[in-house]
Image (cartoon, rainbow, N blue to C red):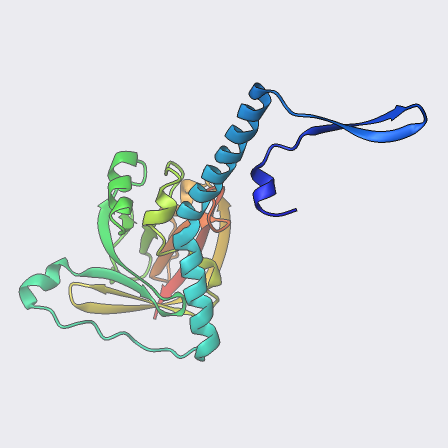
Amino acid sequence: MSFKDFFRVTPKTRKVKLKKKKGVLFSNPGIIKKIIFYAGNWLLIIALGYAIYLYYPLGGAIIRYKLATRETPTVLVVPTPTPIPVSEQKEEYNVTIPKILAYANIAENIDPFNREEYLKVLAGRLVAQSKDSSVPGSGAGKTTYLFAHSTAESLNMLRVNSVFYLLGELNNGDVIFIVKNGINYTYKVYKQLVVNADQIEYLKYTEPNKEILILQTCWPIGTNWKRLLVFAERV
């Protein structure tokens, strides 16, 4: 059976027996059955095409990560920010995760319960910082909470915001860098946690003796069922 045969209407067959002789009787499907058949094929093609369209950024991120880890050993390199004028440094705010080749600018003071507000941020390929969290450098007992996915996103968000797709690859000891206003902050991962989408108490999570960074993404990868939280301590 060739690939083309998959898209051809197959005549219905019936085994018959006439005067002790056996044979096969063919009858072509009617016009309605043909329309249903071809419509089903086109819907299948469209669905497969849309799935590829949605998950292409995710697949690309995974392939780049796998190729990078296969070709070169894991080496910790502290990123050197590109020099920018002092007058512009007040606007500089970004996160870098070397292990998973992730980099993004951060929009601060974003309400995680205001769908219209955070979707505009995420659609712009930015990472959002919850308005209820603290900025880096606030000291022990404070937490910076960054998220790139949320419960109310549309399927198309899979295409425009992929920076945190591979957070599940991070292990304890991996580093995360944040630059804000020209100052570098280094964090080291110490815990990962998978929670339900309605467990919002972690938006205000703190530990008295640590300055914490929490990164949130949807889990399992490419879905919107649960949340993966990565906890990192400033070092």
